[in-house]
Length: 550
Image 1 (cartoon, rainbow, N blue to C red):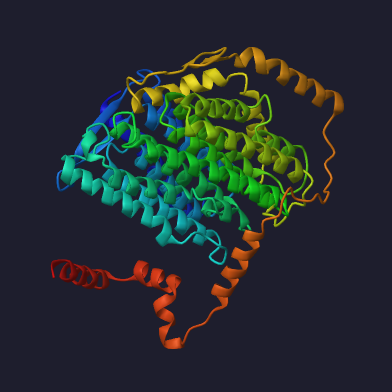
Image 2 (image 1 turned 180 degrees about the vertical axis):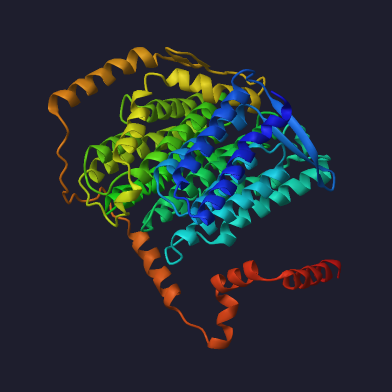
């Protein structure tokens, strides 16, 4: 295909948004059909671009300005992350009913997220990521302006920080392109800003991030799309940092700090999950828990760790499509989804966590201790899953948004794919590893039957298939499980969570004099900023220029 075809995965969602807007204005009720055809068509085009060559493809479309090129690039990293964004988005856009206004914004957000992944440099990724975050916030407000949502300023701050990184690289290194940045330009301070942008973009904190908070909304249409399109982008930046740093981060202690933070993120999610009072609260911690394990693997700085992190994100992508489609009632669909997320054998989540923990032990030293902490976190998450089966549903979303059979099918797919762990790694993770860490030592080998690492061989097909067959036979013999809500005590309470809740309530109810309220009302400031006319922005620009040049 011609190189200009790299634009197709971005242009098709844009065209889909335009077609949906026209249909909405005309009064045609074919929104889901248009969204389904457009989103799945973009995936087919992406696969058609990558599969025949399985090599890096690039196209230059001019200049962004100040010497930065408008450059698109599709390599193993871009292909893997594009699928992580596009597949769950396509499932949700096809099955969930949306008003045409909401569907249009969702399709635009998908296009922006794909552009951020296909961007050839830091600056274009920052611009596209900021657009995707803004469109996600707009989508949440279009769905329900009264429901909680992450502050637009917080999400945008991540991409402003990344644009700062791109500017520094452009000035000091002469380029901000991922494959051309001089290793010396990626200094420790620059990397710290990039890592902060990545952590903020995906909400990778030990406390409840925006991905958990969105699950408290009455409807999960916009929440599901926001998680599908925005959450993987922070991890994408951390993987691209290897590309810019010639296969490693500037200092070892940066890897250790990020890996330790990944364990803390996973443990925080597991701790909140085991103390959840409803099944909805538990499901809100599934994606952050997987994100913590993915952060741990990606940050280890070893080929096996990177492979495990990418495979964990692929499991998260499947569950990001499944969880918003689950009905609120207890049943087989919820049971299968919880089992798949908990990492029970022989599921894909089980295999990738085994690989991730093995990567920490192979790395040795302090990182091996993190593997022990990760194993303990895994145990807590399994206990939380067992408790969640009997929890009440919680605040429900409309039944029209659910698709129990599809949700159960996607969750079951993560279980069935367990024996094919090696094949999943070979298709998605290994090409990305070759681009992010070229010439790395200790590269694992993945095939149809097994995964070969430096220290061991995991015969996934031979080991997991009998367990899968036994599980299928047991399910057929016992019939559909009867799930009843039972109040079970938490493994341990979370007094800190209650304290934080009280502090937040005190801050929320605190009042200031009327003449000063506009100075501390962030929502009002955000509304003024986004709704201001050109004169407001011109005045702000003049004031900023005056302050900088003084």
